[in-house]
Image (spheres, rainbow, N blue to C red):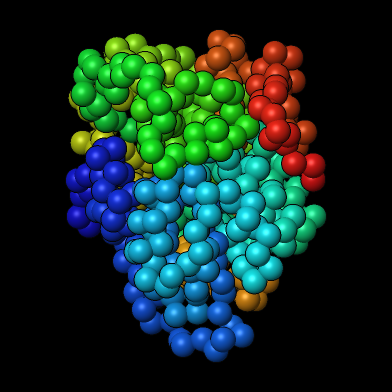
Length: 441
């Protein structure tokens, strides 16, 4: 299988965000686009009318996929930044209505479902309010800004009986299915350690730089962009794309990629949550105004005696493993498997023979097509909120362990730390900026 080349780097991600067709997602995106073009012509009564909340890079990429399904209509767009909204409306080719306030979109009784692709700090508010308005939801990963918010999103999906899908599109690809089947078959023996990693090179040592605060750009409703997050002066680094490197809005590289990289581990190992977590790291190398770690190590321990290690560097690619800037590793007593989005390789232990198992897992018709089909059938999606929340929580608890500097014991059923009261204070934002009280579920 071909070795990935650019999927690990943030530039590759930027290419995807702008074009919805970059190298790292070749398999799953091409499948989704092909399925979109092949979908049968739907009668008017079968058409799913979509609203899009957030149409920056990722939101526009998603719109470019969904608009090609013949049974989907792009009915409305909401974005606080007018240039993004207008560009997305033009790209849709369907003359959707455009709003700056997403609540006007949710008031529309003719909209069946909503795609949420805002910054992370808006995910829970927008998704829960949409479900309360009767809409099914596709929400980008990570599912939530905090564990408590994700828990509420899962509760809302159950209460309002909505079809949900977290935007973890690699999950639908053939490669992750195959990796999960191999681990579950037992041919690698007992898995004692898993490892995921990501190395990037972000303009060392200047990173994002230190731009001065300034007025918000023309066409931006910055007060609405902040929403429930604390009031801050406008700074370009806190706005499009780079917001993820500030604690008010995201959780850095860990939160941004945990769903992609830890997903196959949880899937293959059939687990929901670890029992403990430790973390160390910080913004060591980059001399900019961002906040989240450029260097991070996290270790989660699981109940049946195996560990999951996370390593990332946003300073250098020199520490990459198995000549991969990003990857997923399963270390077993009979063999080790190393892979990523589009390929894997198995290294057999001396004296062991690895015979690949038959396919056992049901395949997806494509991550985006799966959600549209489920809206009609009312069957659950593979990355429904209940699943997406568990994967997202792994990243959230890693960041909490970093902030407390302690080994934290986790009760996955209660979704609380059992040995550190201060850590539980991080489960949800202590205060939401008025008037954006957290929705009651």
